[in-house]
Image (cartoon, rainbow, N blue to C red; front, side, top):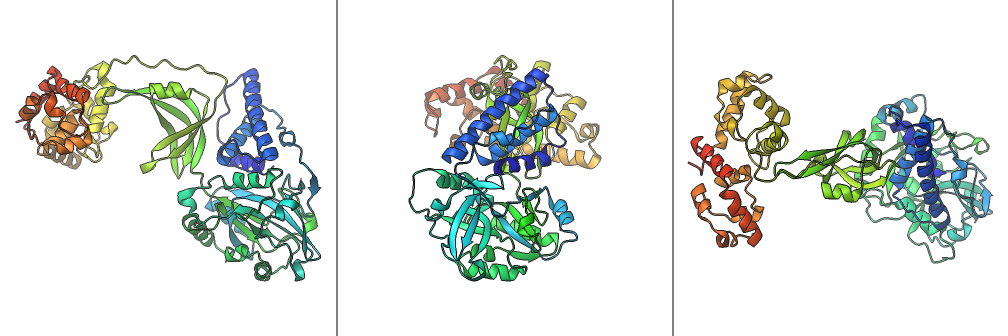
Length: 558
């Protein structure tokens, strides 16, 4: 039930404005039934065997996707039947209310208005339970289940050394609610993520016939129904009885900035557990007899942004790179990752695309790699329709499209983008849009034609100011004096990076004089690579370009 609640919360936050799939009723029924069946199998494994066959985040997001599809096509969600029958089910003395998920700081601030005596805690990532103490002894530990009934885990509780089996005073006859979590050593959520902590804990508690000490588990108590009204008193009693985590990680707050500061601090600092956000709660709670699932108005959660998101493929397209290789790109229904709007992700080569079997309607797990570049992590769900576009014929290679022709536009542009990139000449502010503006406004015969442009010609380009034209002309002119090796990169010489560093030639004539055995003296250059280098350097088109560079006064070619 907890997973379904989490998934539905994500649905509310991320899918309210999404477009429903354009499916016929028959197709919608088939797609919904297929995903519903898969989720039912995952539930079976999770609840009966304690085994998580899919990442928690993926499960939550696909559950949200299912709920969204059901909403789109008016299908009644069979939520109750999706959960396998609980074994040895018992009633909770006090129901679990769950927490309301808030989307952002503004939502949290609105929720805080009019409330007093507020406290912030980390949202510990584990498995929710009820503890029942009678006459000073632990009588029961009950899984959250559906919030009203759960499984009796008392026998497992006896094997958790950190769980107090005896308490005194006001706790002697009490009901506590909290999170069984996997203790960690300096866990930094920002760097390590959730590490499937919830599934690991569930697995340890659900597997049958294992009575070994569960010494890696601990408890974080987040609710004491009908406990002391004063939060400080409540925390002190819990800490004195062996539940010290909650007192260490509960802090009074009155402003949204304080909540945001603790949220950021716990996200980036070492903690003894995994977290997935923060909890904000009021010390003033209803009487325990009034608690019901989804009715806890005094508590809310502000979760962290997921490090990865499930995204739906809206289309497949092919691009041609500067070396002529065909790459496959998946266009996505837009998602948000770390404040970045992501609308596409690179799949890679045609071969990889075919191996991964991706097409429109599939669901991909996408995250951000270095420098915020979207990365395909895995295919998490495939739709029923497996029709795919036909990739273009492999007619381009490393010796095509140095000169501008209509059929060469894509590779020609890729070569220009490479020239302006940080790996080559680092011409700031001149991306694909800038190159397109230049080639539309001025004559471009080959990939180095920009060297011949005058400042006046640059001023004539739409959108380029006089100051910007002067900057561009100066930057273009400076490239003539760049090291010869950098110009070899610009030309596309297929030489490994280590070999390029070791190359001592400083002009084109020396390079042309090299034969295959001489190339093989450089690191990483074997016989096949040496043969391709000789072919490249003596190719008529490349030599024609070298003559153009010589005429333009480029270092190493004059």
